[in-house]
Length: 215
Image (cartoon, rainbow, N blue to C red):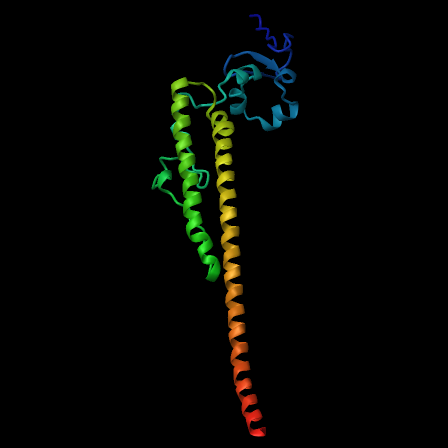
């Protein structure tokens, strides 16, 4: 019985030895050169099971690169601070207000109101933009991988919103810090003047008594 002649599907040359692999998808044969596998790897590293599951480059290139088909874009609404989806968050993102750590004394008022207004508004703006983007995307329909849809459009918009809000926050912090420092300076100056007055007045009274006696 004549043996079956194997030809490499890459270079179309006859395979004359046992150094070849068969694609588990298309059942085509490839010599090691066309399979891009070294002899050392073929004999010493690849197990029989791995050889049986080997896939040629042609089949690999035809395999879908993403598994996001028919996945609602709303499932990808990530909170930029927590990394969780909208469904994983409790309460929802629209109700979240980030709070910075409270500081003591004069600086306490700087963060008390500004963090609530600025960061709270930022999250609400991001949430609103996500809803608008989801509606637009759903109405148009697209097969674009989800990570490509989210990254350049939504993340860029978030960055713009955050930059704007952070600039406002910086101005508020600087303004309130200046006011706080000026208030402290005025208090210190007032206390100093009061102490000097308390020292000078008794001395003036004593001087008057001495002058009266001498006269």
